[in-house]
Amino acid sequence: MRRRVWLVIVVLGLGGLTGSVVRQRLHRTRWVTTYALAQRTIEENASEGRRAGLRPVQVGGQRGLLRPPSSGHDWFLYWGGNTASYFKEAVDVVAALELPPEVGVLIVAPPGYDSEGRPSPEIIEAEAVNAREWLRAQQGAQRIVLGSYSMGCFSVFAAAEAHVVGAVLVGVSEELQFGTPGPFIRLETPEVFARKPEAPVVSALVIQGDLDWPPEEPEVVAAWLNARRLMVPGATHEDSRLHPTVIHEMRDFVLAALSSP
Image 1 (cartoon, helix red, strand yellow):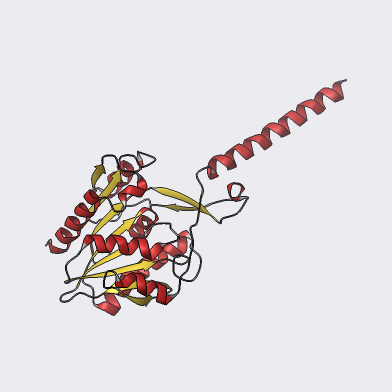
Image 2 (cartoon, rainbow, N blue to C red):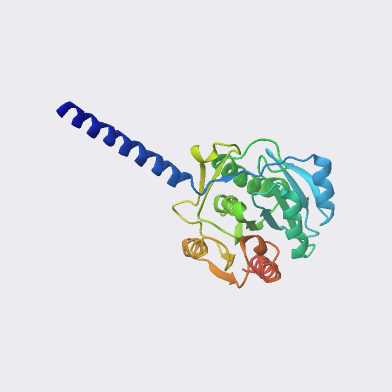
């Protein structure tokens, strides 16, 4: 009888421990998003770029779409979000901004997004810095404003230093968890994209739809960056990318940052 009691206790204990591990794993992975990867040809990317006067370039291990400035050394460097139509959606934003010709434009596609390879937090951070340095070394950029949407904000977190005079972040998060698409994604350990402990010292603007989720994210990131925060009434995460208020505020910020002393 006593052995049976001990056996029950051991079984219950092991069951509780297993349940705790499973619950912790599910808690860590419950917000996991699949990568929306797609890699089109250079010709297809070029077709998208022509809509905004951009031509294809190779930026280290990434593909880019570029329009050099008509004069001067001012640039806008932009990263889009986690989407299977990366360059299309990024070009939509650049076209809507209608930046003057004296501002050069570069859109960069991280590995897996219209560029060869596969993304990871380490690769995307390294390639973001490479893109900034490529603009300085290959294009003579002296003043750079960074722009981003959603997942692209983590590229801005990495690149916001060294000749960067401003950064505008739309649909921002302080942490995102991504996994490889598949039936067991919620049982896999996700790849975590997160902001650094120390914030870069740069003039910044954080724009968010007030229907975006989770609602505290823009406040946390704006406080970390010591940035101005703008909430757009009635806008969801998807709406915020091309919302007229967002485009207007982005354009004003980019031009003001490039003209500031």
